[in-house]
Image (cartoon, rainbow, N blue to C red; front, side, top):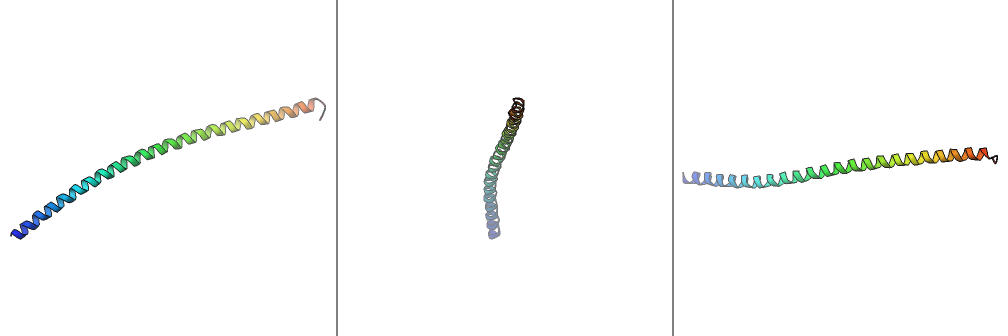
Length: 85
């Protein structure tokens, strides 16, 4: 009887220690998950920022191309009008 009572107490103590360890580990996992969530949110914001910047750069390049084409066309018209062509 004493032996089974001892085993029962020992089992309860071991289970109690395991539960405490699991709680500590769960706290760490939750913290890691929060950190990971914040990192993913920051990456998402950076992706949006980069996308917006690239869109502005493409628009600027298109305007520069259009400007160059208009200047080139105007130069052709001026060259034809002065009789040197």
